[in-house]
Image 1 (spheres, one colour):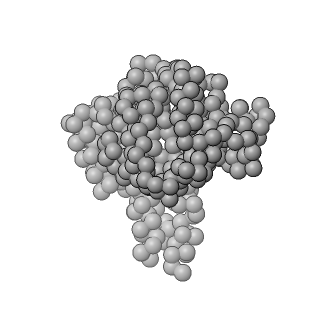
Image 2 (cartoon, one colour):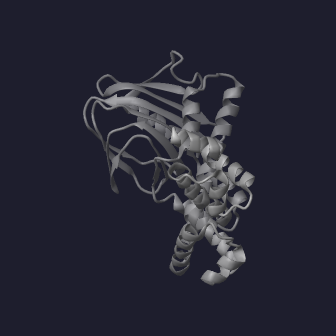
Image 3 (cartoon, one colour):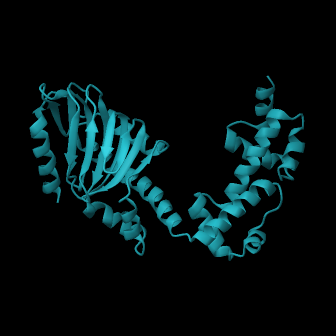
Length: 319
């Protein structure tokens, strides 16, 4: 599989670029650097093929004219951070935009797109072969890992996946040509895949929630929003919507990506922030209004959420 993937990309690159050895410290010293042919465009394509069944790629080039691209991407999970791009994906149709993390399952259908001329395609991405990600996902969730993999069939885009974009930028800026580089890429590939796994597992779990339970959860969230200052125990909330405590805890976490306790705390802090900004109440009075008998605990939780104690926050907003 590794040779098939490597052969595919090298064959593709040989049509539009040629290999160069001098990386001028602009690209990681290990891996292969390709320069786009002048007749086609300007810029470079860097790729590192790991013996451990993944590859890392940096696109940093532009085309001289609009290009219709069709790529039969090999079987893989692919995730890239697009810093700059301009064009349209054709199947399904969507505008290609920068500052997003795009992840999908390769080997299902060709990637077809129109890339606009004179606009730099700048991205950093990782592709993991099935032999790599199937083993990891199976270890994490032996019963449900196939459903999690299927979730990648629908291309996933996020402009708010800073954990992954940060890792991929670290990869682009890393400079080492010894064994440490291999360890670095291996660790970053695994870290990125684990973040993707958690995100896609959440989506998979959310899809498995019945419509009836979804309505109950949304009604419960609305109730919590209005009554977060009360003592909302799990027993009380479970009886209120008619769902057993075990299912309520699991379904709520899967649907809202947070626990009930954290959700209540978040809503209390939002109310507290509003009162600190627009009322003359004391810190103790605000703590009591949002459900805290202990002002010290309230202050600690507020600092955890907003980065400063409520007294300092109130003073900052008054000034």
